[in-house]
Length: 617
Image (cartoon, rainbow, N blue to C red):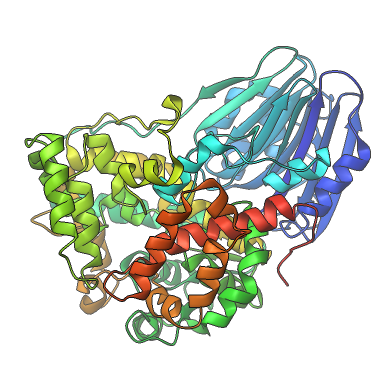
């Protein structure tokens, strides 16, 4: 993958020095080479991590007739097939020139033929229009700032601020979104004036205003009476096809291996497709048997036959890496596991340049425990919201600290409308708690909409695909691997596989109370039964004990001190009560404390310290 940036001004020429600052801020995304190009009001910047056509395919790239200029981040997996249908004088063997040739022949709608992960900036010199495009599922990021001076865009927000050389400001209206989901939903960010292009969208700007178009959405459920056995066969074929597509590269490709069903299935399929060629796999642990899955990852590696590598992450790593990885994230570190993912990426980068991962399996096939509760949400809404929420508060106050998952389920089931229920499952703070912390209701235009769907599970899957997955998990995956100059590819998010999955009825995903039934049936063809049937753990970090021991003083000093940003924008007394409850041992508030601490570190690094170099070593 790469880093891209650029500018289209409304008046004077683009700044060559500003573009150089852009490439410097993005060099971790592309350490192999960097370049800039300026023509009057247009400027383009690019840093490259060479994966395909290593010696050529330099960017920015221009069409032979100079009708289009392009900077491109990502990989087009079907570029060879597309090339066969394009009459163009090719000079390289890579996917970038295929993109340019397709734009010349078909215009911007050519992006709808791409299979892969990408963020694209393409300037149509004939129409004097800049086009920004983000891939269908949001695997790769793209940000922009539009004001009276023009539009500045980049793969990361820091590139925009580097070009402008102006201190960033906080967008207070985005605080509610962050507290609701540990990340801010597109198109908003925590930075005032900076927008995030949503997945499956493209934007265009010329002499007029910015126009944003949605070019892709998951299809509706197509049939409800499919034969389960036939569907398993088709799912198997499509998963193999997606993994095969993701292996396109001229450099070594490995895979993360957590020991869960998703990554284990990908590794098993990958090994079959590679035959006798070696496959490197990577797993992380925390030195805590309550959450470590290293033994399961080793079991899969031994069974499949990979060269397996392990890394152990400790509390000291969190303190040491937190500021630099916040800089890479351009946002609060939303998940404690983010830092572990970086340490994993560091280890992987010593052996390969590309890794596959299992993101998307839960959101496509209903893997989270909450999907089993989806129907209960509908039944709970038969009770009026007021009494339902009062009962929820009464019961939650009596749950022991050890019943954290039950507490989350109770909050979700007793929330108000269905869309509020959907948003509460992953929310650190309920709507009422957010109002107490912020002191006001959120801006009306920031409210999430209930997606169309055939039933509660289908709507829950569509909600997560549009929010939790791109704004949290995929953003984490991109930034933490790019911080180590490593490319991440999630084969389960191949858009053809996604379209297949969302066309299926919910009873093939959560079947007879079994979450992710369809994927598990495919996995049984490749993996030991104990891997397929074991209880889902996830990539958990032992924060509960860390916050009561080594990180305890850090939390209180940062959040309750006189110079705390969190204390200045949120209710200081409510924050102190939260810390007291956790330290007393009667309540497990680890995720809430993490959410606030991450916000504090973000402000320190990305706002107060925006001009400082925080790059991870």
